[in-house]
Length: 238
Image (cartoon, rainbow, N blue to C red; front, side, top):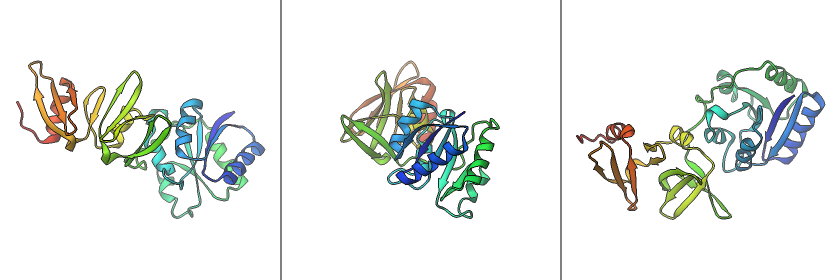
């Protein structure tokens, strides 16, 4: 049995697809999500083998959702879309499968047959866009934090945290994903920083450094990342 997650903001579309999958057999629908934030949590919880993913959803699209996930943990993706076949051709060129709404049973069977062939994980690099917002959690509030507002990001035993002028937010995204999908600079295994948030860099005798941010925070810069940081900033420091 193939384990699956259905992600679509339209309840009727989710129900229809789930019913078709039940009729065809061979698939266990572990859960359904009505938006990308719900989907992120369910993907981490259930680790499905395939996700049937709507492209056009409010706030965070299906493509944006993929850009927020660790490429090594993304299941096989079947896009579900109302686009015509000409608009979806780009996804076929990148070895993605897709279902055109309304989903037909023969077309869905073709998709399931392909999934049963134990295809390797698909490379999502060509189509996943860079992040412009990051889902941030603060007490009982969830906010899509614009990347432009983020000064730096750090990880600790409590998870990954976004630091902005307004305060800190927790995020479910990993530092690796944030490094790959944004222009933030890695300065330490636990820290990413926005380049124009750096006010000052102080070199240390052990070939490491510290940097001060525009908001007055002090961040460590490890020897491993110091050379790259200086190169990215165009600095001629010794």
